Length: 96
Image (cartoon, rainbow, N blue to C red; front, side, top):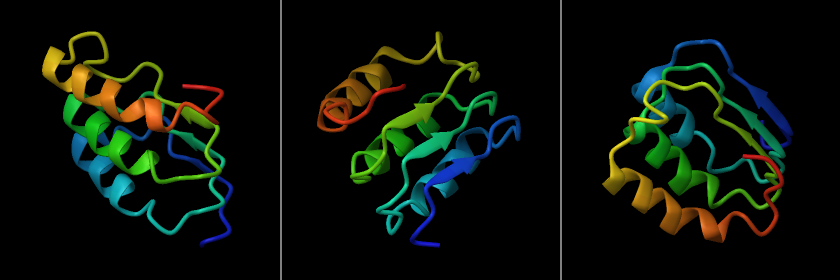
């Protein structure tokens, strides 16, 4: 599994709980280049969990979170926390 380069879990309705589970499993995936999680009902809690762990993925350059629940309704505190984490990732990240 450590050689995985792409994970596509789009359209699975994993929600915040699933995003947390996926996030927890990202640790050893040092070759992961693309993570697709569009249309999964992920809100602020799941987005924040993902942001923390995505910051530790050196090869990641595609992160798709389009059309997730609560993207526009995310609490400002959650958005601010994600913004603090993302600058560490965005050096090599080409898609978000």
